[in-house]
Amino acid sequence: MTDLRVKGRATFLGRVLAGFRANQGLLLSGAVAYYTLLSVVPMAALLLVGLSQVVDREPLLEITRAYLELLAPVRAEALMAQVALFLDNWKVVGTVGLAVLLFFSSLAFTVLENAMSVIFFHRVAIRRRHFLVSAIIPYCYILLLAAGLLLVSLVTGALHSMEADGLTLLGRTFTVGPLPGWLVYGLGVAGEALLLASLYLVMPVGRLALSHALIGGATAALLWEITRHLLTWYFSTLSFVNVIYGSLASAVIVLLSLEAAAIILLLGAQVIAEYERSGDGDGPDEGLRTE
Image 1 (cartoon, one colour):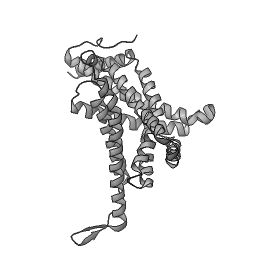
Image 2 (cartoon, rainbow, N blue to C red):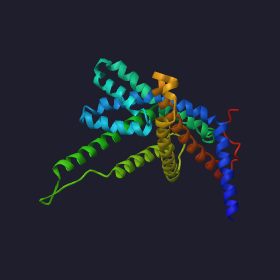
Image 3 (cartoon, rainbow, N blue to C red):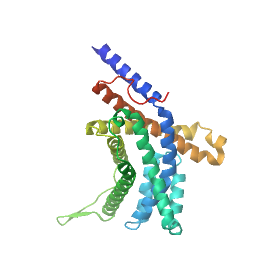
Image 4 (cartoon, rainbow, N blue to C red):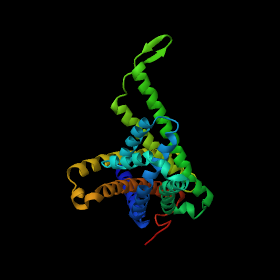
């Protein structure tokens, strides 16, 4: 029985990898990574411009830096420098410039949706999404990220206030120490897993079981955390990318990091797609093939 289970899992994994290759998964990952690189700085800048009108700027910068480190390890400071520079000079951009930045901010989500459509071709062949829905989804995600960033900044500000002044309850004052580092890190990874689960839930056409999306998001977040730490170690100890690319090293490192993240994200989508086709009785050869 155990041998049959192992064989079945190996067969399923082989189908996932074959499907990912047939769907040109690496090419799709490269496109997602490229457009994410184009989108990440404008998106972060616009979010900070909007939220800085409501809350203090410094906590927002700290939180944004932490999230950029999750997305692009090693070179997050370079991205943060560009975001801070734009934040200092955003008034000179004008309304048209802000609209252009908003458009570029949405590109990553648009390309990701197209990549998901390739992987979930068995859904697209049955029912296509209305183009207006596809046009709105990226901006809904930007609003969702803005709400999340605002919530985190407010909670962080409240915790810092309690650390300084304590918490008064029923006439008694309780001192609140700083949160443990492992707890802060765990909350960040949990938020990352929820965001990835939402991508699996919303980006493909049709409905996906919430449990499948959560499992996919948690697995992708875990794999990305392992990959992120490996990339940080590699680029800081063994890599010669600074010698080879010189001033372009930051862009190359960020792009490689984003490509690794995109591969993990799309592989998770391929796993879900193959599982759905297996459940529907379709063979491994169903769906879009580009070779």
